[in-house]
Length: 96
Image 1 (cartoon, rainbow, N blue to C red):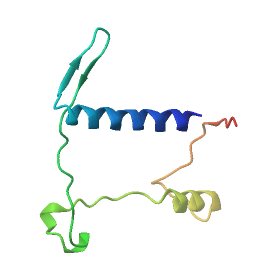
Image 2 (image 1 turned 180 degrees about the vertical axis):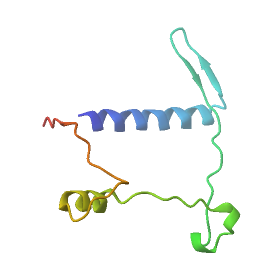
Image 3 (image 1 turned 60 degrees about the vertical axis):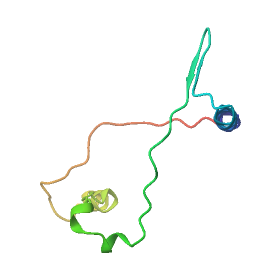
């Protein structure tokens, strides 16, 4: 149901943009709402693999592999000082 409402809102927004462009209207001032149309920045298209980009234009990130760290901590194979399991208990609820 929420997905349908979201899709409907997206379709309505696209229709509104198309009609405002067609009518050459950039702004609508209503009594309860104000609607403005602005142009987005152009999307960047990379034409080569990331490995071929100059080093100045690439971000390198290091992310921990939490799955491997959790497996190591649960195995108790060795005592490690750089990671530990939290003592708090968190729950998630799924409603269908």
